[in-house]
Length: 267
Image (tube, rainbow, N blue to C red):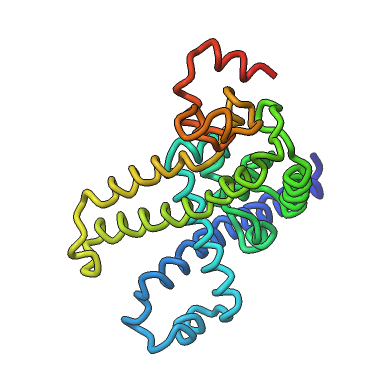
């Protein structure tokens, strides 16, 4: 390597180090602004949110984008740690790093789709620092798949008899996300001895976790192995395996014997 190449290499190393540090600091700023917004700790030293923002050299709009991204990071983390149902949606072991690296521009691409789907998109990205182009492509692919999806995870038909309820069940994920957010806020309030939570006991987060685990049974996991989603109210009824829904939760599916599971999951 000649002198010119060495000089270029040094510049490259310096530039990439700065940009990587900037990316990391942007993610930290998202979390910090969201925390400031939630706790209102800025009131100790400033008369208004605008005054606080300007004192730090940010515009109100950029601070808003950072705070929104920090909120999304908290939502994703809450869903990720809420229960086994969430793990099935986004099994990538790098997902926590991808959440921590979320930026306002990536968040904007994910806006408008359920939090669980956002996690699924991030899980499919090839890098811990996904690009806007890759995320956009995955969002489009996910939307196209959802529009044409007529089978469950093991290619069993989602019949017309259960189509509407199946979709309603999937949308219930948004309710579970809100419940996860409540649990996280309660845990934070108790850990920080926030006087707002003075009448809340340490058993409350456990109750919320139990509620989440139970409510996960609303979410469709697979078409019912007994009625196959065909006239479920007639075949399974209120006392049948799927109680007339035509699909079952992950919990209910787990109650099947090993042989039935193997036959049903064989693609």
